[in-house]
Length: 435
Image (cartoon, rainbow, N blue to C red; front, side, top):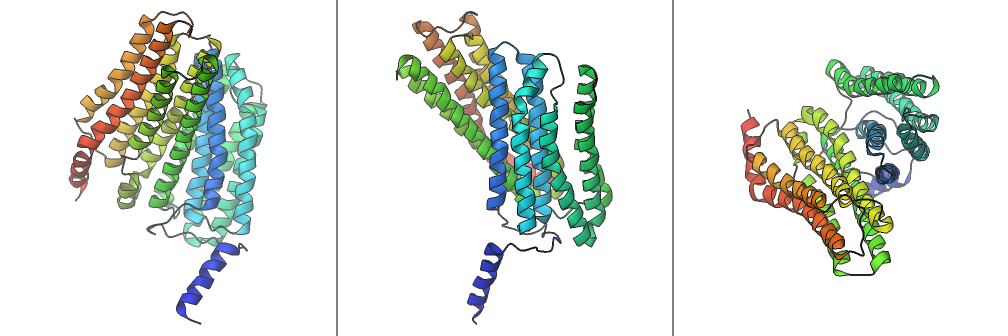
């Protein structure tokens, strides 16, 4: 048997036979490691959850319940994103793609769907002054996280070098999940429940850092994690494209294809494309592979990044609802689009700074240049008055096009600015950090 034939047989065995394999840990220094089809399948369920949360946010903003809806949305994004990060951390360290690992992953996907079914109840409860947590979401979360506890314990049994930290992760998830369940089962005033939920969230964020600093990290791979985060970001941006389609479809149904509809479609796609371009101007994989210890702040920065991207889609859904039902003012539409995009731009700059552990004075004029069109969009909408949009009035349609166009300009300014000055400033920050 030639060496080429033997190598092919080995690859076929790895690809096609999924019998139980030892879970002894992956190589944290492996270069070129890529996301597996199982991980991509898993991600799809989370994008559905993001889309469902954005849909609920848009619905309740349209009904005039913006503040409680934003609170429920923040809770949903944290719950969904944190569970995804827990799984991603484990798979980067121990994903061996055997049958047991695949089944455990599929069970977790079922939990994501169940949690998604609980989102309407969560938003409704928040709007009525109750806790956003509910039993259906807790059941989904339990189904998502109990298999992960089992996987951490399995890794602890088979990887002696990382046994202590693996057991610590299993205990952390079990204790936290018990806390989430108790907040949904034990009757408490809404304010007390929300306070406990916030405390649990803070503990969940802090505990992995403390544990890994004391016991050492499991064998996660920084380059693999950077790719996993970037792919989920990319898929989430796809929800923005879907929202553009919905918004333009509503406008076409009302008035047929027109110059306004075409301009809104183009502006929406520009927003989605600029989000993609701007995010991938952050050199995450390159920096994390060189300095893996910078991953913690970078990881947590993605919690608001995921939320902001999905919220841009919610803003476009708000615009679609305003067009279809003529129930919202131009100012409400402008705020629904401008606020999440401004938050995302701020997080892109913040992520660059925590990743490179540097700041750049060029960011100040660039940031102001990005925020200026967003502020202008809000001002133009405010000057149009507070009456609901009436597309039968040419000025309302023209103002809507101007507002969406200005929001799109913010993304263009961000991309062009970083393309012009970003490379040399990033290189300078990198060289300044070299010993």
